[in-house]
Image (cartoon, rainbow, N blue to C red; front, side, top):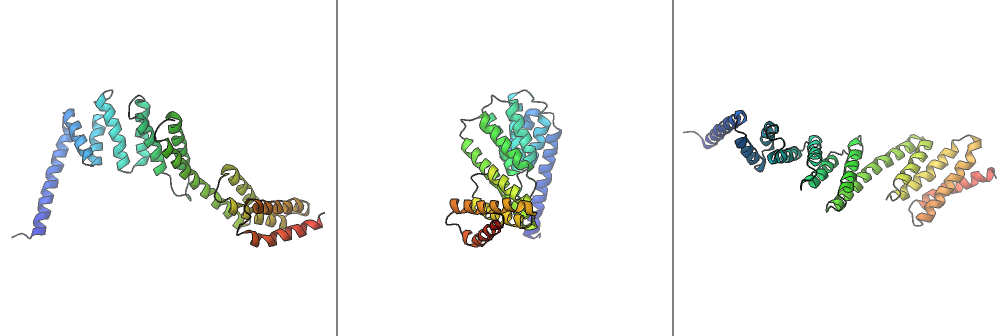
Amino acid sequence: MLKRPVLFIGIISIFMLVSCSKYQKILKSTDNEKKYEIAMDYYERKDYNRALELFDLLQAAYRGTTKGEDISYYTAYCYYNLEDYTVATYYFKRYAQTYPLSSRAEECLFMNAYCYYLDSPRYSLDQSNTYSAITELQLFIDTYPKSSRVAEANELIDNLRKKLELKDYNICVMYYRMGDYMAAITSFENLLKHYPDTERHEEVLQYMVMSYFEFAENSIPQKKRERYEAAVDAYNNLLYLFPESVYITDLKGINDKARERLEIYQ
């Protein structure tokens, strides 16, 4: 007598062989209506790979028809559910452009942008997809300004901008730690210009005080005065904007030294 686990595996194997055999017959069939029906059944059962293969075979046969539109729509979602977001963006965008009057056009244009959002890598990597996601989300907002998805699109843009901000901030800090104070100062200034509402404003001002001071210390005599003055200005700016800042005490020594150095150039 066969043991139950072996019997069970045997039954499963037979079932899979029969299933594959039926699937191969469907692929070779010339009955497009049947193919479409089975493709939709696979899709509903979340067998996206098989559904996708059948949809690909049916696209040419149903081009320009209602079913052709449905195939384009479900093809996009097959790639989305398979987490192939790069290809999914293409199909969602193509659907929105091909069927702009469809009730699903708005949804697909949003999903196109959302796939770019999902494909955005962690902040330390190349951010090309992040910029593309912001562009596509803004396109959606501009195209459908009254959409119920606008609030979500704006929230996604904010998340992406925070990622870009974090990347820029870390680059600024890297320049400071490398001792390239001129690059650090320029980078910190640009960060405040691009992200005026940054939550790191206090930290940025702290680094600017230290960067200007170190920059002045390592400058030629003709440039020292203006750079010590910039260090003092940055300290005063921090003191004005964040009077309770935890950095003020530590930076007071640097500010005092900068003022002492300036007395030489009076």
